[in-house]
Length: 178
Image (cartoon, rainbow, N blue to C red; front, side):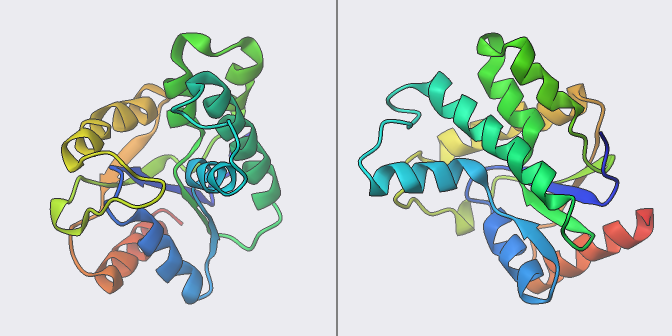
């Protein structure tokens, strides 16, 4: 199942993905927030145990399952739809713990080009769900990118400019492939 009007914005933690998606949403575009942060927020609020620090595999299974649900639900949103992260990176993080049921999620495909945000120390902040140092967050960038390349996607780096300029860049990329 491929949706050419589904665009993934991914890359380094704390590099402005959520801010960029919020700006796209504010001007009327359909967006899907990051599932991992939502699961962590819910679990922290209810003192739950589906956290990467408690059981990484169970956490990743929940994130993947919700990502597939979000993908399916997004079929009914007005295109284009922008996702804060996507299924290939969650499959990569499951790694050897991925089952055939998990691998079926690979059939949920996005537009051929994935939009990337590089590590950006000047805007990086820790918060309730993000505890890693900038250096650790930056190390996750290459494995995230390689998950998409290995899954057959092309990549396009979003420049480190203002939010408004990033929005314009993203929309120009979407227009170029439409």
